[in-house]
Length: 437
Image (cartoon, rainbow, N blue to C red; front, side, top):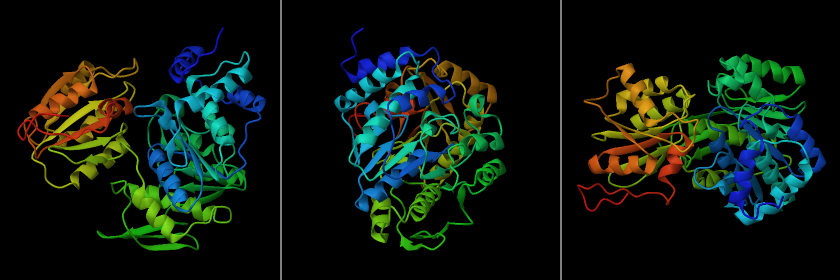
């Protein structure tokens, strides 16, 4: 059989290659990695956690780039383009540059069946291992212990927040989930734990294998006021820092974890205070409490579990006054949707539920039925509408919004990505001029 010649055809092939979308376990992917002799010769940071992984990775990358290092980054999922998953020196790779690495994985795997996530991770890891970089950052997809990324040994592991998500794979308690995340730790190597109240299972695992935990509140911490914040580690301090370009109070915890990584790796990746200031000031990551100016204001956030939605609700509360809040929402069927509704309901005047282009998603009609069954109240009379896709939902939200309102698109990456397909929309309400979302 001839091999695919485009990234799109490779991805389509990967989607059909394995009987299940997710299969936990490292045996198959490790076997192919060993056949490829795949390894990293530069410091490797692996980031796991329920929420905050993407933001932490982006901050690590931005600070390292500002320190003059060349950086390779693997993150997932993507919002619009698959190539977003792989960045070298701050730039998204071209699809054509990935093709030789897909071919190398295909040649090495033989009869070994790989999932879409395993195959694509190996291809990107091969690209990064051969790239001219000084540091590699890999983001875990699901859990940690049995995630494909864990075939590599981190020089420094990072575990961000721990909350209930993907419980069918990871367990239904923070202790069980914490143990799964702890699987990325390695004996004798640092692990930065950013969760302010880490599960005991994580600390016990670190002690059992002899990892070196750096814990928020004990080994590093932050203080702040409305103008600036300061960070203190074991032997390092940064004072008078401007707030990170990624908005939201929760981002200070992510930034603190990133700075702890650089202190833990100070012998191999020393950085300056100026790199910290510039890196945090310039960091970009779409869909993390991303505020897009316009009339009305647009907020984009990939919050899709109760912990992340609680942070989103707090950040929305801190935004200042908007007469009405219109929400575009879509999510996977297995998420804690009722709890998400309960946390957001006090803020929402209009719900625009949307279908998403994956069979795992709850339909707009299912979301409407679940919402109706909860009998929730909003700040005033609440409207509920259903739409075929996120872009249509956004257009409808704009059509009924006033210029001083706000529109919040949140939930699945598919929901936020669906409104970003043609670039970041700048909204203009019909009450100000022509409607051009």
